[in-house]
Length: 260
Image (cartoon, rainbow, N blue to C red; front, side, top):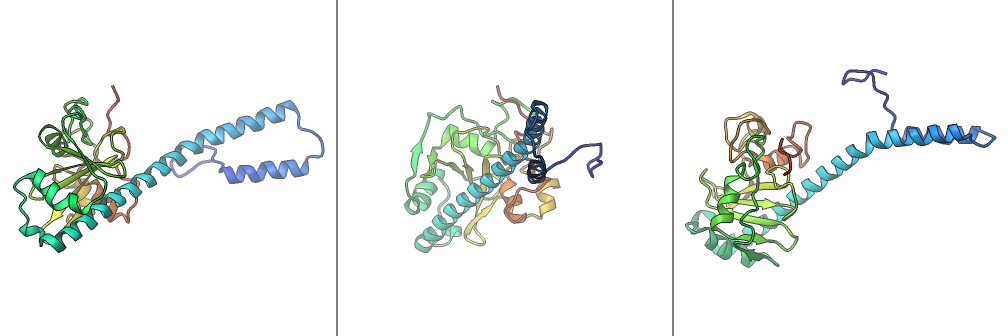
């Protein structure tokens, strides 16, 4: 049977297979032979091997989107409360990153603890497929590891903050804390403090969807062979533009890197 992807491939959903087995059981009056049992078990194993990896991947994607939305909501609420008390973001003193976090964020969040120094060898890598684990490091995150604290949220997520060099103060969140793979766009996501709207927005959200993937920015949500220490910074914005889903052209996976 030929499918749209090319090649001959037998595709049978678990539901269809279950119906076939039920129909066979209903029609058979005698006991199954050993050969029939072995064939049935073999087909079940084949179908499971074909479907379970996709099911697990789709589950992981949905889980990732849920966590990114949760992080976005937490910081949005914190900044909203902060602006009510401290005024618009355009009037905030953002000259010192630690002061920004501890004056404008933490009083409006619960259960946040600060870590400094112990995670110095914990890099958040980029979506680039070039460079080894130590050198392929997302700059905003690595800068904070070496010079600023990492903050651990009540839900286990890590975040750092920097007065980013692209014009937007930036929050970078690792949605699964110390868990791997520690790659931007997979478990690392960036958000901006937007002075115009005085709110938190996914980094890159002002760009079109096409420019988030195919533009000239160094922070593209694209996995490629060009080494760039900001690659993957716009992936939360891509999720948002796709209705908080991970679409087929999203650079899902380990970023082309292998574990050491």
